[in-house]
Image 1: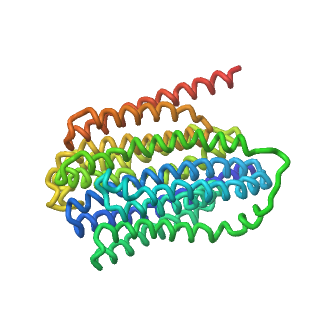
Image 2 (image 1 turned 30 degrees about the vertical axis):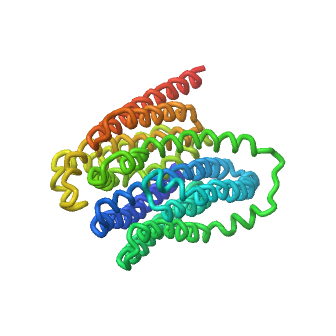
Image 3 (image 1 turned 135 degrees about the vertical axis):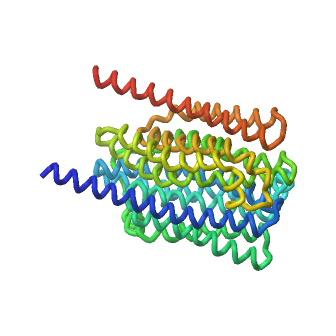
Length: 425
């Protein structure tokens, strides 16, 4: 009977993972379609502005994914150990903290937009929209973390699809109506609102149960500490993978910035697979860790899958850069073909890095954040100190991505050696 139950559980896990992969692939197709259409609908300098705005938006979203990753890990832990009361207290307390905590920086960004916009060579109105996006991203990622941690993967898949479709439809309609880069970015902000509304539907019973919930054990300090440590990791990863997109608009000439934006757009394909795989990996690792089960097998399977899928795209870009550049972003970005090969390798390394992060957060091994913070400092320094041209910027990104990958491998082997030693003792 136990064997049958284990097989049934494994089949359910496989179905959930397959659906999240399919749903995220559908969402990525719509999301990538948005990028490709905007590369053709907007002028190269306007598209460089949109890419820089998305770089900041991704920084905000990945920073907000501190909330999603930590929420998913804690929710999966409470679910695995059947601590319903602790889960309800956690949801009640952190709903308030997320809403209040997001409001302050959002208001500051909107108020400072007349200063931030000219400093980054971006439209003031679009910078103000970044503040609105920040406020939406916090509850959006909190509810997404609950869906992920509680295993609501059916809804979790639609959560991605609705967001991607809303961004594409609203953005394209506004650009075609003459709203330009501002209209394109409005579509991205509206997509966050659409995803948030959908995610609330399956969570209504949980929020009702959490209202007024109490628990005899004070969990707040431990949860807060975990959120803070997760913040170091996710903020560092967000900066590590997006600071070049923001810097390219500010430091490169308009034509070069447009070409660099084209390389960023093409490399997004490399990051398709890790998005879904990382979500599944974090939840599975957290649950296995709470039950004292093996956490290495899900990690190795995830790394192998991403190496095969994202690795194939990287090889294609290395083999025929001009061919794929013409297909994806068009003939108006000829310099992109010289950048995409090494930039795709950097994207592959960062894709694998996201899986290491999911593994470390799922196990509660948060020291890796210190190494990521050092990598961010190195990348920023190199971007500012090296010559300001697209090829040099790509080399900086590639070198830092390789260093971060070595740091992840070293951290894993240290953590594994410690586990083996403790088990032997």
